[in-house]
Image 1: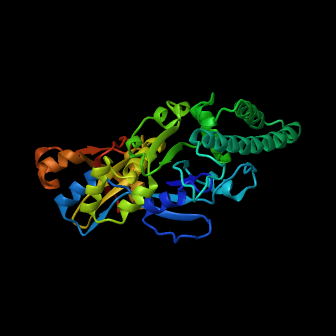
Image 2: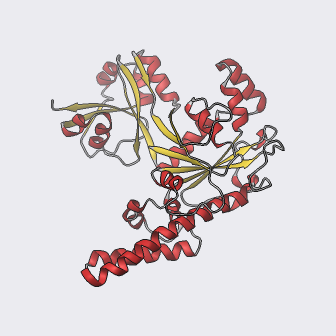
Image 3: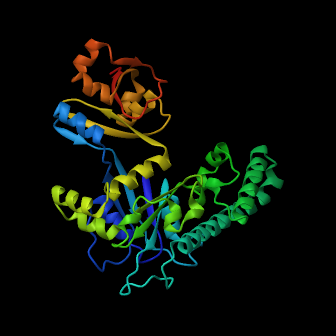
Length: 358
């Protein structure tokens, strides 16, 4: 999964990306697209690793992409930055809520609600241009071909244009799930899940964990496909430079219950409908990210394509029940390991051992 961080300039976007991926960006570096991998914190995997003491401990990962800052008037379908955002599975829109006279906001003042509206308008306009171009092509094509599928697509694109002209993002408008799936090839920006990350000042830690209304973003509360998380990238950057014990002490003194990384990734998982399952053993304990609703055979394919092709059965046990048993052998003796077929829907926290034909 790829999640793209976007926003205006000087919002702290690259600092947040650096915290998430653990990759340093030297001060004064010119804006450029950067990709990095974040390891997904999961206490369940930590406990399984402590039980099995494997050679390798491998968390699930999420790829975060830091794109070049956007600005007012970016809404051109041929803008390469928007092209990079279209390739992502979800967007993190970073909004600046901190003041720094030495680093002025590009819009002249601090107003997260205004910046959110500005960015969403840019995305709406960019999507509208894409949809209108497609409508023009269909209008030229249909008189020549008269194919039912082209007429059906034209009807759907006309519906898309009506939503965008009404300033409704596609993720939360009148389109159904089947219609949104049919539009995936267009990679409309306003159809992508959106995580709004409010970057607070160092004196505003009391607002971390606050609902959107307290952040001045009441308009996003309850919107379909939208989540909000508040953090202070500056403070998180300072914490990241400390050892584990000092970091925990500093975080506790500031009243920050958990790292921004944990909260942001958890929100990303919810937005994308992701869950984690585990494979365990003496060689490796590993977490795998899959879409909610994935069946066992497809889940096996995330481990290796050969496992999907040769899938026979999966031995399944809940992670906490495996801990209670103390080992896979003990779980088998107790009858706690279940044999599930190819169409079993994998649940969050399942431990799987795939039986397959070699």
